[in-house]
Image (cartoon, rainbow, N blue to C red; front, side):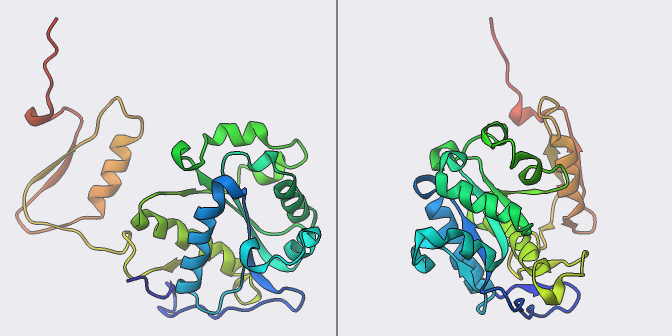
Length: 242
């Protein structure tokens, strides 16, 4: 069901371009044992969303491991997939250092699920070499989370695609570039036909704000109401006996 990526302003698919000295739109830098499966999904989804995109992924495009720096240099954007062991890999560090040296646009994608090769973001920051840390983890650089569920992966894919387009000549000057996928979860309209209470636990930092955003996105049928509460409804109440 995955459709072509579209640009909000034109409601049409983007036109992909490359600078004369570039061969790839994006280079996928990753640690094999913990990130290979995820970047394979990213490559596949990018090619479905933008059929003319050129993606460098080692299992398909690497001819000489000694030329890693050249492949990075020939790419418009470098995606750093943060999975366990990334900063312990000699080749990953070669790729990251070349990207920083050539001042390549970067997008960081974070795998947080430990069962899928992830780790807390603080762990990656502490493992990152001093010469790379200020650039990779610049406070102004957003870090894109990677999710297990395909519906949420699409949200991350839109973010990755926007960074890819900003790294191309045609869209380089469009800081307000916004893209969408027709069937992404953020595009679906959810209609509520009855009164609903959304419980936001006061023990969960940020829950009330997140619930308020969720409620603001709902289409509430006339005569019905959706409200956010911080006191648990009776069905959620638990009695603790000593």
